[in-house]
Amino acid sequence: MGFDLAQYLTEQKITVEQALETLVPHGDPANLYLAMRYSLLAGGKRLRPILCLASCELLGGQQAWALPTACALECIHTMSLIHDDLPAMDNDDLRRGRPTNHKVFGEALAILAGDALLTLAFQLIAERSPVPADRIVPVLVHVAKAAGAPGIVGGQVMDLEAEGKQIPLAHLERLHSRKTGALLETAVVSGAMLAGAKSEALDRLSAYAFKIGLAFQVIDDILDITGTTEKIGKTAGKDQAVQKATYPSLLGLQESQRFAEGLIEEAKGQLAPWGTAAQPLLALADFIIQREH
Image (cartoon, rainbow, N blue to C red; front, side, top):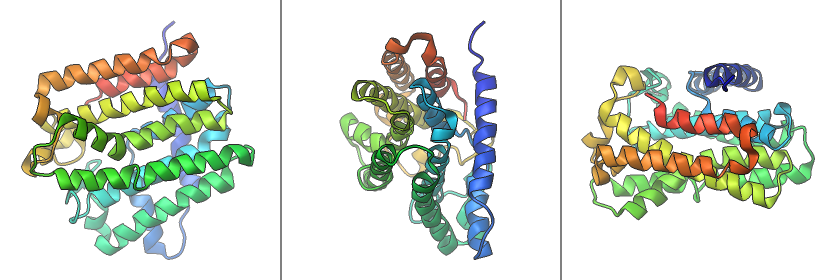
């Protein structure tokens, strides 16, 4: 009997949603927590936390070891979406099919909600992870790099600077490896680190994650052109409207699709040593290339 990805995603998503609900309660100031929870609990694929849980279990760890870090990564991802949607950034009105955070709570509170989610992430990893400290500290460092200037923040700056310009393909890859790929990579690697993985396994998983992260962004670029606002849950055609550097703008749609498919096959090749034990990560790689939103 084959691996049932739909069932796996449903079960893992429920686990993550329940943990997020518990770990990010209501608090004071009430409006701040409302703004945090508005975006954090708005649904989504929960791909990053699920990847974290899957890699931890692949390396012999328990789901509970990685769950706080998995939720922390979703906090950071949500922060990046809140800030990315701001008028000073991508200036978007829709996210996951409903008004963006700043449209509901105002720009100032949206910025602060993102800040609070970012700092909460590190608290969750440090305070809630039921593994030895010598595993937690490297995870904190890895996550901090992915969230900061070497990762999301640096990638966002590169993205803003590239608008309206023709940039080389290699530059676009560096941009997206930071803005999108860094957090996906740290999701996979941190899960394995919490399970006590050694360097060879971490290298393979890092390579796998780098390639699926890049493929994820390529598909995002394609869906911005081929998808509808209703299906993708955000404003379709936005990249073209602001002359954003994308893979389709450099390679065309068909070549971009082929490029993404090649990345996924290369990513899956990195998992060969684990055989059928890697089915969740193999299926998640396929999910990235097949998604419609």
